[in-house]
Image 1 (cartoon, rainbow over the protein chains, first blue to last red):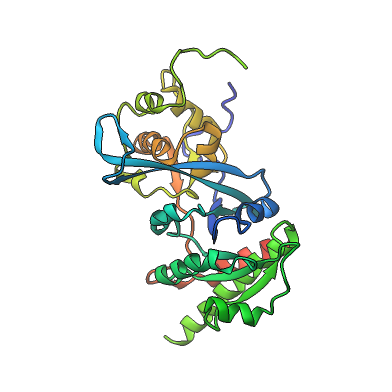
Image 2: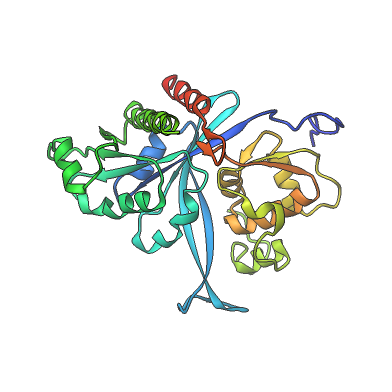
Amino acid sequence: MDLNGFDHPGRPAAGGTTRSVKVMIAGGFGTGKTTMVRSVSDIKPLTTEETLTQASADDDHLIGVADKTETTVSLDFGKISLNDSLMLYLFGTPGQERFWFLWNGLFEGALGAVVLVDTRRLASSFRAIEEMERQDVPFVVALNVFPDSKEYPVEEIRDALDIPAHIPVVACDARDRASSRDVLVALIHHLKDRSAVALESR
Amino acid sequence: MSAPRRPTNPSGLERYYVLTRGRSGPGGSASSLDVATLIVSVTAPAPGMQHEHEDILRRCRDPLSVAELGAHLGLPFNILAVLLADLLEAGRVEARDPIPAHDAGRGPDLALLEEVLSGLERL
């Protein structure tokens, strides 16, 4: 076994000052969250399993844990090396409604979120937008333009989804790396604008 | 495909019970672990360590997120968190939480946002 890199007392931990940031990709079921993670990630997207235990009267009992149920949810995620010492992790949120109870913890510590919308099924992302607002997570809305999507003017969709004027709405093709990258760029610009507003109002 | 070493399903709950010695969740320093928390080894594996602890130390010589570690080891987050708590308490790994866009009291981190932006623009 190669132990180089260890056994140097006083040496700083390997990886020096590498840090991470995370961005969540939210949206209804089938809106292209995993597709977007896959298209911008530097690594082959991976899946991590989060087992959630909650007190419940459900039928999913574990031996010896009679009053709790466990739900395993899968998060697809990818990584972008922004520079030598900063990693961006992208996590696709579980799209099924029955997992939304766990969204509270998921967004903690995230820079912000992208809410993907399938313009053919606007309603599927209503709940995600509501959750972002409720949890005060900064977000941008990305209209994932599917090949058979009708052309919708952005403002029409903004009205239909009741998205406030200060939230950016952009169109994208989640399958395309540059297009997905541009959505992330729009999110970071939005975060900077928010910061500027926050600083001015002090 | 190689034959299973045991007749039981090694990916099942029994395996997790054995790995964590029956503990169901981490306490102390590991209770705040995030899926994007980076884990870095600070010591080499020691003889006689639990196999999974050794595996984590080897994989985290370069910083690796909890999510990646979970995916590579095939362990769900809460099981991995128990194992990481052991290593954190023994001072064998270091954990670095993801940087939020703004910290309470410190205000928005514009320098960080600029850094993220220039990284994205280079893609």
